[in-house]
Image (tube, helix red, strand yellow):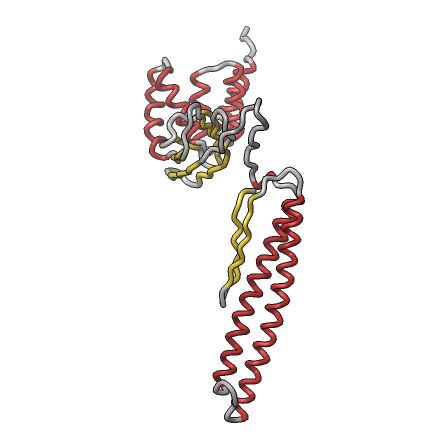
Length: 294
């Protein structure tokens, strides 16, 4: 009498069925379940097959490398070596530069320790990079690989040395923008809105001045020679006054908004703040630069 299939075999069968119909996410999930229950090179190979289809080329590459080094089946080892060569060309790669390398530094990408910082294979999509070393605040960030063969370079700087625990509190790690509190976000929105308003006021002020100079040019600087020149000059003067009024209102309102935003930001609890809001404007555009640590 045939023995019933084990849980690992059942999971493997589900994976093969899902792989056959192109449901790669379900196939990977089933194969990974089977591998946890009963690790086998065949299951590893199938995980690599569906990883490749999901854009996880670096994950598949690591599996094929392991099979080339440890698989006892000659045919599967040869196929793994062939796939290894193909994926090595297609996989996206990350180059990490550390401006202040320290003893004991360790860098992980998606929780896996990175060995080769200059040529690290990564999967398509987002990858989380974390760098740590004794006595300093961790560095963390994300990179996104959008296409096969893409080369991404990042430069990171670890935080300043923290004080010893005996001597005082250690420096807290820098927070991501996504970790801002609602109060901080409100303050940032107010500062941005205020900066845009100020930049708009500066733009209208420039346009008002331009219209005023045009009016003076029409009338020769002091007296209009003809009624037509007088009418044209009056239109330009009215335009200059209107733009000047708009500029005054925008600058005043923007200043109040920005000031309110700074107050809300500064009084927000438990935030590490270092921010500069710089409005920019020209005759054709209004802009705002927001710089700092959030």
